[in-house]
Amino acid sequence: MKPGIYLKEIWSDDDIVELKIESFDGKSLFSANMYIGRQGLMYGGQQSLKDLIDTLTVFKDQVNGGICDIQMGAFGPEYANGAFHARLHFHHHSKIHITVEAESGFEDFGTKNVAGRATLYLITEPVLLDNFIVELKMLSSGSRDEAKLEAE
View 1 (cartoon, rainbow, N blue to C red):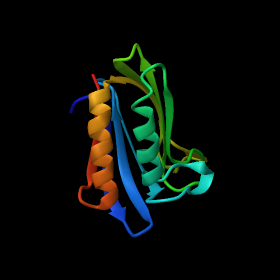
View 2: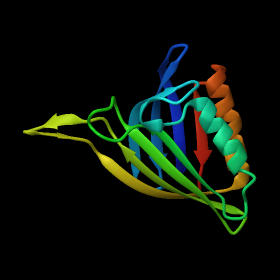
View 3: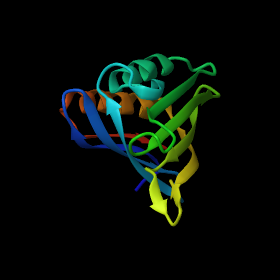
View 4: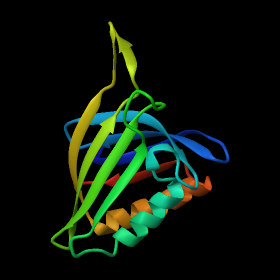
């Protein structure tokens, strides 16, 4: 597996998609499942697939230091499954630095209710972001069940 962010559709209906999101930095792999709407905001202000595509489409042209936040799922035990937040930041016009924070679903662990958490750091390029946007559009339309943002 190459470093990157991998989205795989597990289940969906007309309104919601359950995704498995894997983040891999070349050394550490973190995986969590979460729900995301096809259109319109869900709880916690997270983005829908349509919002995500629109946001990334604007961001890809902001090569002079643009910043973009991706939020899927929601952090905390009161929400279903996991959470994913990625901050993309253009660095020197040709590289995009990504900080990923992710959380798995909460589970009982002795007397506690806990979730795994990870912070990973990735670097990608604008052309790979373009490919990711195309794959997200196909995922959103149902013509594909995976999308990936490859990293170095």
